[in-house]
Length: 321
Image 1 (tube, rainbow, N blue to C red):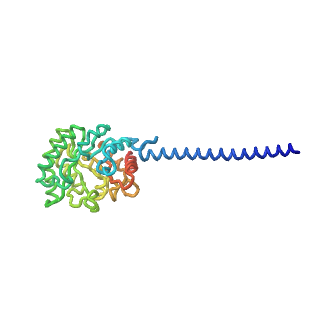
Image 2 (image 1 turned 120 degrees about the vertical axis):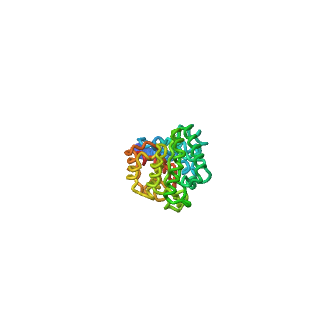
Image 3 (image 1 turned 90 degrees about the vertical axis):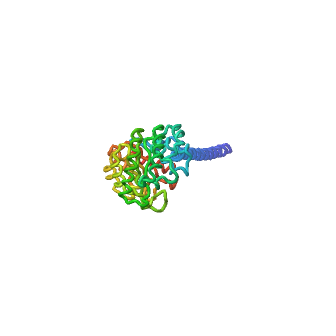
């Protein structure tokens, strides 16, 4: 009888230990699975953020050559970090950046898709619509052309300027005269001068709209470019500005065709990210550029309102049609 009781107790103890062991093993297994999921999640999120994970963000098709516009991200990243982000996403250019920084771009295997011009203040205020500015602007444009030709930058930016006392017709004629004076130099150097149209409707911020700018319609700027009559004077087709002033973006791309030398993006309204808070449908616009035969760069020129890493990745992927 005593042996029976002892054996029964031993069996009960064995069963208890087995259940405890099973419970412990299940708990350990759950912890292992949880840790694995967490590690996997971290890997994905780190790729979306710092770009150190295994999943690649950015350009995959590469039919649209993409560029990062430096001034939009200058409050977030150094020049070196901007270059790293461009490389991570498959962008080939950092643009509208001081030529003194071009050696850094070269170190990262990047080019500059379009150069600014060395003038004091905001360059779009004093433009070619005023003959008094022609000597200064021609010298600055030639300097930018020289630097661009040496580095391999294909484009230099240009503006009509603000209206001042000139009618639209006089302003256009002055622009035509001014561009003709520098077009031959651009042809000789193999660099294209790109006239940018800017919107005059958004007065909320000097980086979002330019009340008083004369070249505020794409047809106006296109007419100037056509009358200059040089293969090295073209349009900077800024989709954000065109949408605000003229709309009908895809049709206008078709109308401008070979006269488009460079392209910019941003979300409207607000000049923010290219996300679902804004109205421009970018994939078919990118396809329209390809259909028109456009082979230049598309510069991401939105002002970040949230994580710039994620916003830029989203914009690059959206335009990679």
